[in-house]
Image (cartoon, rainbow, N blue to C red):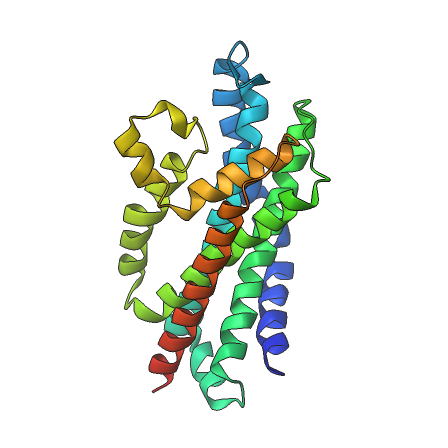
Length: 245
């Protein structure tokens, strides 16, 4: 496990070099969503006793933490295909689990940074929710852990950027819009609700939203996220081992 910090430190050096660009990139999409959906369209809409803007912010937290955690896969692919960094890790005395842990923590760090930006935007728009609830941050961490682990495993399996883009288009993008981020899942037909409840982002959205409103949280969602994250993490360790071979 001693080598994981070297992997994580490299990702933090990349983040440091691109910090301002990443901050701007992380802020653009949530800002547009807040303007278009929250402010322009949702001023007179209430959902379960909350304004649509209050409903939207936790959904954006879930979606953004998913997207930014998953972006670590792109960084891994760039380092593999162009800089051949993975070959250097192969030659170094770093275990597979240390490599996966370091990259996963890199994705989680990016996700938390994006959540901080959304909280700042929410305060700018005058949205006050319970950001100090510890269960809010636990849900954010588990959501980031799930998709960062998935990204590491996916990055080891794809053979090109086109493969990664196809995975994003067919898995991540639909989940971002159907995972309870922009609308209550309860308003869908029962058969659709059952399908959407299979998505980890749905459980993350529900957990983050409940915690941010100060409502009792459903521990089942936390268990689902933890279990899914551990499965993806172990799969990532396995595919890294296969890639080394």
